[in-house]
Image 1 (cartoon, rainbow, N blue to C red):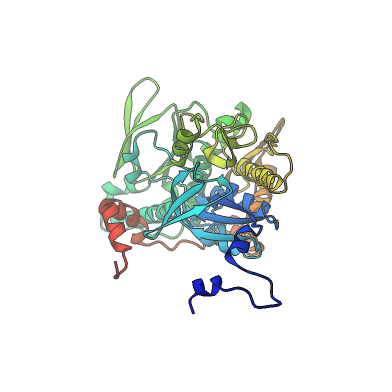
Image 2 (image 1 turned 90 degrees about the horizontal axis):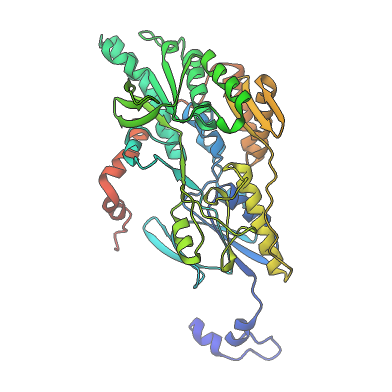
Length: 475
């Protein structure tokens, strides 16, 4: 007997009537859809652990990425699994939450529907409340062609590609030196980091540590400690948001590590063998460098444009959307935006901001589901900013409190361990740090040619290749 026929029959005597009509009027839990598995999305989902709601998280990856430590994956300190635990595992004990893979392509606010694609398949999700925490992408400031030779650092794929490029440069320099092709060595042993914010400073510092300590005695034909590391930025200071004192201290520490800091220098062209830099006075100079790292600038997820068109909300120059004081969107109190895609005065684009926004949005949704008053304005609690320069060197700023050197470095270690998800990953991180910072080794140094070339190959082959390769035989 079919399910439809069974449903149409009356219930046996003595049993409750479970007809379709009665089931249609049965109370259902408030459906919350969370887009994104970053800090905002994950902490919002965890805060929604309540019987009144059922939560569906849709994200383009199956892991939660601890993005502040990506540079340590790129330089061989940490494995990708340590900073990117599986989201499904993180939420396994939260019975009201489910995790689904999908890259959200469209949002229909009037119909309360979201469309996502995963491995060539399209799915549609309905919701009562929506949290959009899709994050931000790397920005090359309108010069997207630069990405071919100067990859950013926003995803695990980016970090693994950079790891292959960095270690591969030393290997190719050794091969060139052994063969007597000395004209290539300087270019191969020059590393340029574009962007002197926290990510760029941390990346440059670790490149110095890598060349001076880890690899110093491992090659026979080259001297890795003579690698040239250049940190570029069009701005006038390093870590400008940290204030003049810490900016100056950071610059001096970088220079002590042998890093060449060049400020007021704008990148105007990039190719496979180097880049062209324009100085403040308009003069241009070429830097020959095989390995370039782009750590400058972000742009919001394209979904913000879709949301702005449907709500009339404003976008800033980086494409971030301006939300209402309670993080909802104009005319749609059931839709909340959190994290890097939001432009809100006084809230920096850091993990702590996304976490607090996500928790605030979850609180508003739970209050609505319980019939309580909503609309409370979001208030950001500044827990400070920090950046590590190298082992035993860091800077930290919280209000009027400023720390440098070893105290700041210890504080940096403690904060990052605290926010890494899961006890196992915290222990693994501590072990890797002990190996790299107390000793001089780096355990995650396996690189392959595929890591370096996969992204470019997929871009060259294009969307048609992706759609064809994902098509099942039945299709």
